[in-house]
Length: 288
Image (cartoon, rainbow, N blue to C red):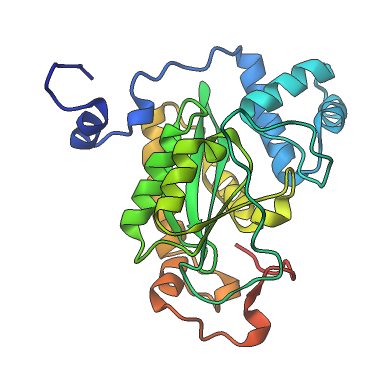
């Protein structure tokens, strides 16, 4: 991409070229091949055992034959943007200017699309590096409204995904739920959500139940696509991810919905399901 005085912005150039802005100028992660393989193993363990912090993660890796210490594992987990998900005391203070909002979904029934959206970020391994993926999902239907890839954990690609979701959806949500990550507590992101009229809701730190449906989405995405294909480049990853989300939204039946697809449920609108299958957040039921 070239910067020309008076010419289109980099973002507009990417739109015209049909490529993701976050993948422009991609440089493979400056990690050794051994560390990249270790990160892939950590990712698999974290999907199966999300309560493992660095001590247990280190112990499990050693059981699998890795010679690692906790300091190394802890550093890689931070770089991957993952932490153990279980209730624990709040030990950090949000960055200056970042606002934290209460969790608004406890015991709240979600009975129709666009009542609640949620967003989350996950680490995505490739054959020679890694990327980060953010997705915006409609909570009721599990329909993925938008997603974006980035080689950095910044707010820009989250804003891009939010704007894309607002263009895709029929209307803004009543509530938008995220975790307390710096990307979602950033002023630009919070202000954009609030400008739609939605209320902002944030998970308690480390509580996977507060955003459980999108956590299940990551598991499906990685086991059904990422781990099987070992993408070689950001371009390949973007193409493959697009195909997987199209399949997930439009062709993949969900048992929870009587084997309808997320898109069918989202387009149907108001729920015709009986009370036993309504999305009561206190129950924790439902599968991807």
